[in-house]
Amino acid sequence: MGQYVFRRVLTAIPTLLFISLIIFLLLDLAPGDPSANLPLSIPQEVRVRIRESLGLDQPVHIRYLKWMNQFFIVEPTAAVEKLTGLQIGDSENRLRIVSWTSRGVPVIDLILQRLPQTLWVVGLSYLLSVVIAVPLGVLGAYHHNRLFDQINSVISVIGFSLPTFFTGLLVILVFGVWLGWFPTIYNTTLVVNSWSTFAQQIRQLVLPVFVLTFFQMAAINRFTRSAALENFKQDYVRTARAKGLNEQVVVMRHVVRNSLIPVVTLVALGIPGIFGGAIITEQIFRVNGLGALLILAIQSNDVPVVQTTLFIFAVLVVFFNLIADVLYGVLDPRIRF
Image (cartoon, rainbow, N blue to C red):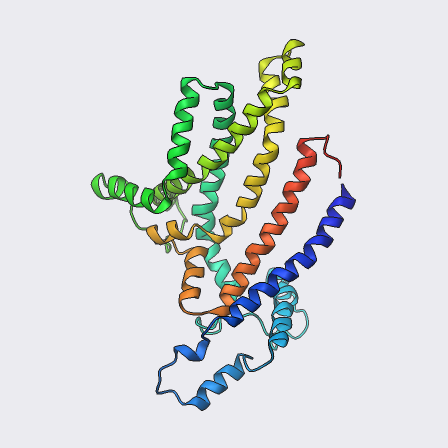
């Protein structure tokens, strides 16, 4: 197992470098820079100095290497200093990745400011979707073609078919406007420091979390049902039942464990999407999360924010893909690395 993880890590390094190069080059080729949004009355000399201060006058390979150095060395060093209070090197002259439109605020600081809102809404909905969808998928396969399975399949198809913007607007109209049960706009300035504010936080979470959970659990439910249905037909399940094993043992130990292998891939690769945020849902409910940050950065042509955010997503995808491969061996001992 250790050798396998080591080989995968070695494989991931050139993969991430290639992805970083693609992201950097694509955004570098995109039209526009900070001087493009300046008023026409700004002299050309001022525009040139702005580009020079941001290093945009340097060759593309120099800027790419500087960005890699900032991402893998400068930013981790700054994070360690912030967590431990220790000073490592010349911190005052250290050049971090800064936003072009947020008055030189480090990009990582912007991401950390938005991360709690995204984890509250998108993270909680993804956790609920996994906890609800996996048992429903197994029960649907166990009661194949019965009333429960038919109802479960219809709900899954509806959840998978309806886009989140339609479901979001529908629940806002019904539960927010007509019934007035829940707030329609997410209050990102709310500080949870008492039971009353915690109750307010739960109330404003209900609608966006329901919308995302309903959509995400549909795919996980269908995957789990298909995998469990296939495993119920296997010879080892028939043999376990013939030996007189308890039905609960047969389902949990033999069916569920083997059915989770394809589900693990789906769930693990979906986790990075939590940090990206559900962009559409965040826009509908005015959640000031990472998805909203990415949209704002794209609209304002804030290349450092877009570059760093996209590359963080790529790192998370590679990392959780590695986690999924390791879990394969835990769930199925027949898999040899």
